[in-house]
Amino acid sequence: DAKTTQPPSMDCAEGRAANLPCNHSTISGNEYVYWYRQIHSQGPQYIIHGLKNNETNEMASLIITEDRKSSTLILPHATLRDTAVYYCIVRVAGGGNQFYFGTGTSLTVIP
Amino acid sequence: DTAVSQTPKYLVTQMGNDKSIKCEQNLGHDTMYWYKQDSKKFLKIMFSYNNKELIINETVPNRFSPKSPDKAHLNLHINSLELGDSAVYFCASKVNGLTPLHFGNGTRLTVT
Image (cartoon, rainbow over all chains, first blue to last red; front, side, top):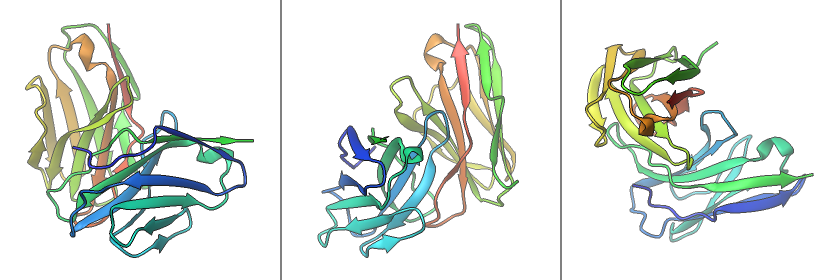
C-alpha cells in the first residue's frame, strides 16, 4: 500500500525548475524514497532514489528533509517532454519488498 | 537492445476467453513483476517472481496464473476473461537489492 501523499497535479513553465513535493510522514529508518515517472502510454521510468542525503543525477535532484518525512523532486529546467505523472514511492531494501505506487502528480509543462 | 519487452502490445478479446501475455527481459535481472494499471491510472502490483519462484501474490483472482519458465521470462495467463480485466498490464524486472525497476511498455487488454 502506498505510504506517500502527492498533489494530484501541477503546472510548470518550460525552462523553469519543476519542484514536485512528496509527503511520507510515516517513513521508517530503513525505507528509501524512489521517484518514477510515466509518460503517456509508456511504462514507468526510474528517475532517482535516496535514503537521507540529497541526490543528483542527470535527470533530477532529490531533496529529503532532515526528519525524512517529506522530499522534493527537482527537474532543474523543465521541457515539454517532462510532462508526465510523477510517482513518489517509499520502499524497504530487500528482495521481497515491493514497489507500491500511489496516485502520483500529473505535471504539465507549459510552453 | 537491452530491455523489458512485452507481447502483444494490444489485445482485444471477448468475455470468457483465455489469453496470455508474454514478458522477456535481457537485462540479467533476478526478479520480475506484473503490474496492472486500470482506467483510473492506478498502478497495482499483481505478482513478483525471484529466480523463477513466486514470492508475491497480491490477492489476485486465481484466474490469473503467472508462469516463469526461466529467469528471463514471466508470462501471464488469464482464464475466463471478465470485463473488469480490461487494463494495461506492465511487466517489470530488477536486480535484487536497492536497484530500480525497469518496466516494459505495457499490454493494453480490452475485454468486450
